[in-house]
Image (cartoon, rainbow, N blue to C red; front, side, top):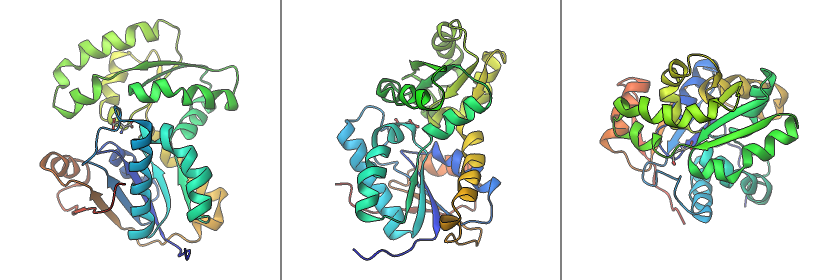
Length: 275
Ligand code: DGL
């Protein structure tokens, strides 16, 4: 296959959550051109098989590389990061796009936590992300004296998606109290959906732990990455554009995009083969 150079930064998530990350990245690095892709047709990824999550992630990356001329893609979704990232980086990229890059959110999040001195780190995430133990594996490489205390929080995504905020206190108390009692110094919100409730979590934990939210972590980490990789940075175009795609442009997605990005943000349907 002929390698053609892309120019934009892609951000991919299973649904809407990654848009918080894309919005924060754009605010921090407004000069670049961005393409956001939410796989709203296949969300949630959380309960799917490993094989399907990989397939959906690879298909989304192909769309961003081939149809949208992205040179660099950030997988905002934790579930896709823990499941698909290693194989994408080790097999898919070298075989197909050796000059392009795919970044995840796990390692930058853990680096950021340890830079802040965290050693007793709570993690709330989808069942899949916690059970994968990728956070546990990666932290040992960064600092062996730190420990991850994972807690699957499967009720949060449906509550957030279905305007169930009034039940959040009860559910969060239940999930967080035993976790915090383990003596945490920090708590990672390890799912893009949870960014929307970060203030709520901070309030509820009464600031006893440092709540780490990926919309605050990824922008400075990406900036640092680009400064260390001029060969990538120099290829990126700088027209300050932002395009928003979804595999299903449904009313709830439109409403949420308007809330986050303003009413003038056009949303296009992304059509590509998932298999
Ligand atoms: N966006 C996913 C994540 O960050 C959660 C939602 C899903 O299950 O697709 O893990």
